[in-house]
Length: 101
Image (cartoon, rainbow, N blue to C red; front, side, top):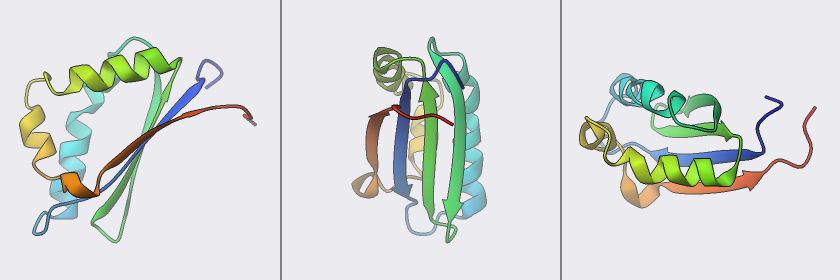
């Protein structure tokens, strides 16, 4: 991940009643969109307690990360993907990589 200078962290809980498998499938549906974005380097998504998700995306630069975030809502099927997320629990942060080993 030598090209990455930005880590995007999205932390959220699923809506009540949404199964972990349903949420995992929704997150997988974003893979093609995200990986096709300019500046994309890598993406890792994790789950804890079947309801708490952490999505980590590595970007070449902050502009690429922000541009992709703006475009995601226009992605075909985005509304179905976001239906699983408790929007009040979601946080999105961008971090500059200063140490990489």
